[in-house]
Amino acid sequence: MTSTPEQYQRVMKSCQSLFAKKMTDYGSAWRILRLPSLTDQIFIKAQRIRGLQTNTSQKVDEGEVSEFIGVINYSLMALIQLELGVSDSPDLNTEQALVQYDKQSKVVYALMMDKNHDYGEAWRDMRVSSLTDLILQKLMRVKQIEGNDGKTTVSEGVDANYKDIVNYAVFALIHLNAFEE
Image (tube, rainbow, N blue to C red; front, side):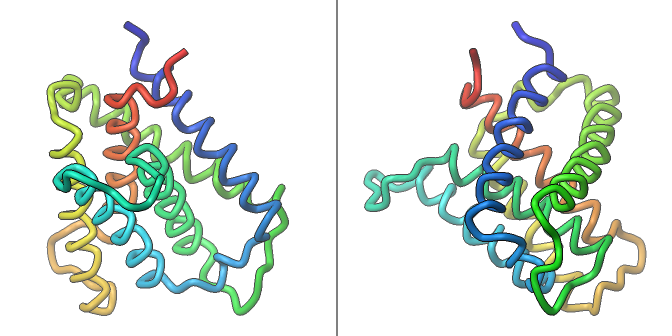
């Protein structure tokens, strides 16, 4: 079996590749999105994944893999927005956006490695549907925090939730063998 770091990096490399291609097509138009808009985009993706997992038929020819990739990329965009702030116009070229993407990816990866150590790779025994539910739960938490003007009394902020969402989505893609060689 391939190690978690190798599998994780393979997934993230594929996600970053798609992000770079979309930057070529669309530029950094996403920079105008406020955090609640990004949260809603992630929510739409997660709801579709849940629908794919529970419905017997689908009408759009895109499966769970592409939706989990979208969850990862939108979550990383949200983390970039948290750090840089929202812009009134597309203000990053592809190279600048990829630097930010890589920076946030490294922070999320380090968190995964720490938690994976402490939890003993418990995610390997989880179902993809459970990971989907956890993503949706984290999104509900983010929406509540956003409704509280970003304030929490004892809980982690939106950034911690976005990071966990990325990691849950990566774990789901590993379970789905999305990028095995």
